[in-house]
Image (cartoon, rainbow, N blue to C red):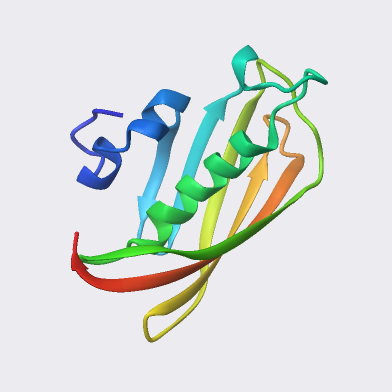
Length: 133
């Protein structure tokens, strides 16, 4: 994630880099991020730990909601897990803005596997600060 086409927010994101996240699309209100599930991302049932699925979705949400020169952060988020995955699979999170009102926004993120099956649905609530990016 040191590609110069990736904006500074993601260039400095050590957590996303450590997870091996790859940004495919970075547009105002829309983002696509993928991740290959590693063995060390699985739980005791040998399925992807939900925290990693959440982190992938949260990263796509963060990219989509940081639409201008001000820092936007999560005010809250929830996720529904719909299908388990395993090491070696590629997960893709697609985030889309639903609405923004004042400094608050709602973004939906769909996480799919490599066959296009929905793995999880995430809804993030954003808050835009006065802090410059």
